[in-house]
Image (cartoon, rainbow, N blue to C red):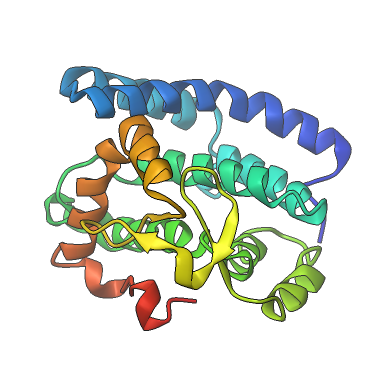
Length: 230
């Protein structure tokens, strides 16, 4: 199987993802400000740009593949902070491509099962990004090569640490706190939680919570760290 994270492919991937990084940034700003019209307008722009140019013959997103190539390269360089930041950008894009912010139960019958599965994968990525072993496993399952197999084995032997959703640094499990509302975002300090709330999580928290409480969402169960989330 070919590697998608060769030097030439990484250069291409960075050029592709740069455009979507800007649009996702605009989307998060509208979410934070409660601007529903701006939010849906940016979603439409992202989907049009994505679906017209960046979907392959199998219906897979070439942009997400580009993000995963970059994350793979960063993990191989042991740059965990930037790997997590890029993976977070990928999950943000996936939420726009595969879910429009409405109730899952409003999806049309023919698309419902496929979209629920994609939303499950999205939430799984958000949860697994918290640990090195979870991040490696998630990316390794998405790339067409075995380049992360050694990293996967190594990460399973590391002491369990959890990353902060703001600074993306690893901290001992016992010092990390969960967002009390969505029970998904993790933080190393009150300062990081406040900063992330104002910057990004304010617009996502209720969406995470609604996804997890939705009728179909028990497909994925997000356990608290205290209960031993891997």
